[in-house]
Length: 326
View 1 (cartoon, helix red, strand yellow):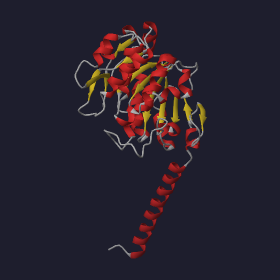
View 2 (cartoon, one colour):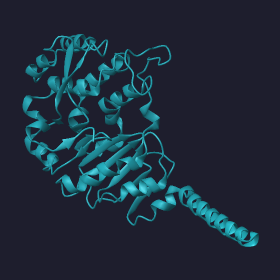
View 3 (cartoon, one colour):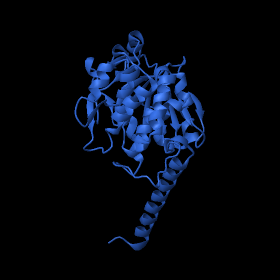
View 4 (cartoon, one colour):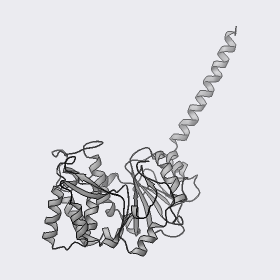
């Protein structure tokens, strides 16, 4: 039988080892992310917390004209698989930057782990100041949505961000094309340089698969049809793709859309005066919040009104391997 002093000594040793483990763990995870991030050799800028962008790594040798944008509000480490395959599968010579829009400040070690997955310039951009805003005059306390997901207005804020707010962010102005990827989307095979292809085709949008929203699930959806034709008549706009516009409403109580969990936008087109006027007019109806007019439906209509048929490309026409959700 083991004597008491020996047992106590062993217990003390275990206690000391465990205490040291806790101290080391606390030190590692409580270090300011600024210190951890400096372990990455090529650091351009990092101040956490602070005004956006608060962290940019892996600087490009030349200023990029294209970017891959991801909106994320979860554990940043979950992005590692999707980020990791971009260098392998997107054949753009690593020229496109990555922008991760965040509504919080993740811990430094997680940023570090995700950043090491890519050789591309990657910027973490906090959008707290704009993401949860509402159109002027809209009272989120008195209003009630006809549809909700993950909270009263959460999904609606996401729709408004991708349809309108992203084009108000100064960082976006430097890019000719911006690819949107949802956090649960991923390239699963080799893609040709879609940005060069859009440039050569004079395209303004590279769209995803066609689907449709329905009034049965989204009460108030068909008010968008009324608004769209009233807007066209009021402004005197001649739609550049009347076939697509008619197709948008050809199923009773449905509106067609291009799914936007993948999507590429030409910044100049979506920031042009005619398109900006339309975007602002949609925003002022409060339809995004009252009836969950989705950014995918709104973008489908935007390209039907303002883009010619040849200016919109479809991923499904080129067999680009992709999954969502992944």
